[in-house]
Image (cartoon, rainbow over all chains, first blue to last red):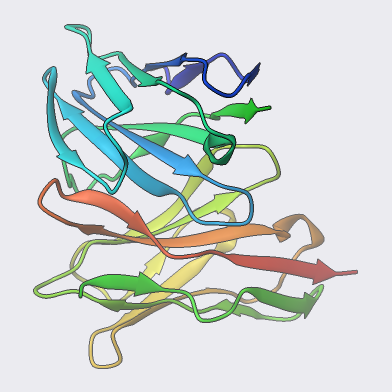
Length: 114
Length: 113
């Protein structure tokens, strides 16, 4: 059983650019959630995907968008990058939204916007 | 508003002493509560959870937590702290229309040798 894998681990982008982060969910998990963790803060919920449909979104602007694929892997896209988008982006998968087994997290992608 | 809170940003404890990291919640109904740990530049690792049943939950690495419904708390505990326990600890609860995992602000635990 493989866990959650995220790529890339680190990247640096320039303000105004676009970025795509990728996540492979744990085997058997059909729900993927994305979180943004700024330095010194707790993870903030961006959105969640279940069976290729977004089924919940946190307080993030539309330039944050996502996809989920038939194999339940997922992408997070951020357009028009701002300096404040610099953060650790975490992906988590679960058997279902709110499942009592909880969520398995990847190691994250560290995004730096300069 | 429904939420989860960690009232202490920082907890320091001497190695070998018991440790407690506090968490309180404000959730209607029966909450699903979790503790995660994060080491520098790493993702979140699951420690333990409370879903139902026994109020004392045992988890990984010798950690345990006690669910207290009357005090709406879910404090993380360990009888004897190790230097290697030093990390950032997050309490979390399932909340919202998407039933997403919602985190507290985190507590930095430092175990002093």
